[in-house]
Image (cartoon, rainbow, N blue to C red; front, top):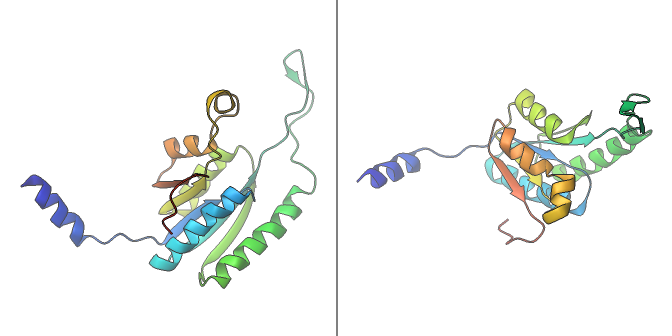
Length: 165
């Protein structure tokens, strides 16, 4: 009885997506995540916000002290802007009219979560590179950190998975 009531109540409430955040690093896998987001945006009439985060390089340390503050790679912003524009145009060509893009320097997981809060997104669609074992331990997972801290649902797109869009 309880399950039936929950199903009936859930069926009466339609799911809506108005804004989708897609972090991109221009890898084939992040483009796959954008494909998922584009299909969802088409289906729900949602807007897409593309986000590229460039993490600063860590300068060499001497005896535990950093020599200089971490710089962002030279030319990264201009290069990213061109690639973001091309991705935004491809999404517009697919019929999604509300497309915005932005660039942020910083730690990817932190900047993605902050952007999601600031933009008040309904969904984050993010790719994971699927590292396991030592690589996962050493590199960590941006997607995993985003899932733990995000203010909204997160769809994680893996390299090897069943295509449903």
